[in-house]
Length: 133
Image 1 (spheres, helix red, strand yellow):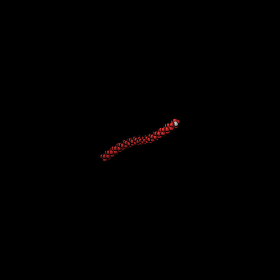
Image 2 (tube, one colour):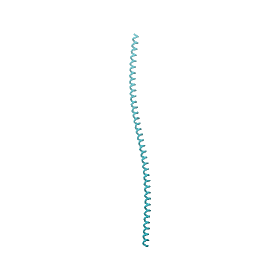
Image 3 (cartoon, rainbow, N blue to C red):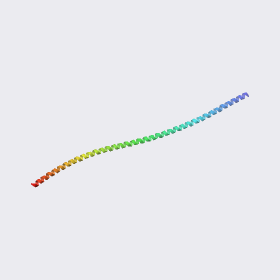
Image 4 (cartoon, one colour):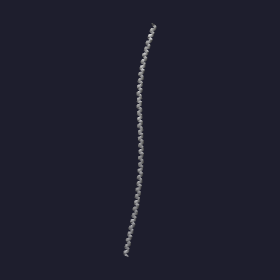
């Protein structure tokens, strides 16, 4: 009987140890599941942050492209303005040259008119003298 009791106590102890092992196993499984869920949530959060960063990078890239385009437009406008100023300066130089040429031509015409007037005066004097003779 004593031996049976001892075996029964050993069986109860083994059963208790097995139940404790099962409980520990279940605890470990629950902790593992919680860890997996936490990792998945962390991964989801990381994925979300990566998507947000990717979106920000895309927006910055678009803004940079737009800024470059505006800079190119401004450079083109500046180039066109510089060309217009150069053309304006060329036109001013040509206008000044034309005015100088016209003034020279006018001076020449005035001189010729003065010469013709002098000739007419001389002819008129010669005609008057001839009439009086």
